[in-house]
Image 1 (tube, rainbow, N blue to C red):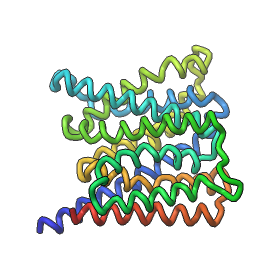
Image 2 (image 1 turned 60 degrees about the vertical axis):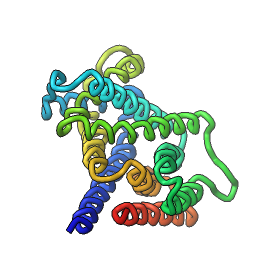
Image 3 (image 1 turned 60 degrees about the horizontal axis):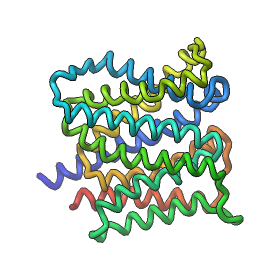
Image 4 (image 1 turned 180 degrees about the vertical axis):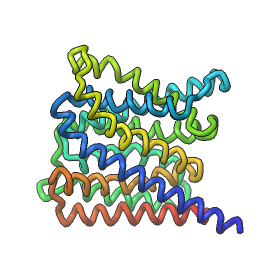
Amino acid sequence: MGASSSRSQAGLAALMAVGSMTSVQLGAALAKPTMDAYGTLATTWGRLAWAAILLMAIVRPDPRRYGRKEILAALALGAAIACMTLFFYVAITRVPLGLVVAIEFLGPLGVATLGFARSWRIIWLFIALAGVLCLVLDTTGWSVDPLGFAFAILAGVGWGTYILLMKHIGAAFKGLDGLAISFVSAALIATPFGLYEAGFHLPGGLVLHTIGLAVLTPLLPYALEMAALRRLPSATFGILMSAEPGIGALAGFLILLEPLSMQQILGIALVIAASVGAVLSGAQH
């Protein structure tokens, strides 16, 4: 009964993670017209602000119920979310979406290495890494804008930190209280950047366009990821997210018309195989 329940929880967490990744990549691809019109930083700030407003209105957390340590952890998670989101969206203006996600995935790979380094399950890490390499290399070698690459790396640092902190926040806070407080922190950190790019005024179009984008990313995916992390170890979750480069490349192909080569298709297959293997072996652990 216990093993069956563990497999059920792992399967549910896997579905949540897939839903989260799909929502993130759709939100990234669909945000391009808004970013072109109002700027990358302003658009990112708008969606973070809306996510904070909506989640605070729905959850209505009471910070007085929690200690100083918990509140500081939630604020730190907000900083990681702001870092990850701002750098990611700047990076995709310079580098194709699938490539940015592949580079950014070095963050979750680092988390996975910490958890699986002394286990045979590290094989999933190497399979995922092989898939990522297939996505970022072509017949001419590396094709990366240096500044875009740097932004993607910084987004990856934020992503890895986010996974570790999200696990802690999910355990320390009731429901989505911690996530709501974190979104407020992320929105406040992004505010000066967004206001500067918007010319220190708030265009009505930006307000309207970022409501829906806020639901796709970050509101829905982060809520799903918090629920998934309550059911999975951080290392297993880090490997599971290896499907995201493939989903990003697919979203770029279908929505932004960024082409996929046979090598990139092979990369998608490898990262998805690593994700499935990690979930199944994690459930048996």
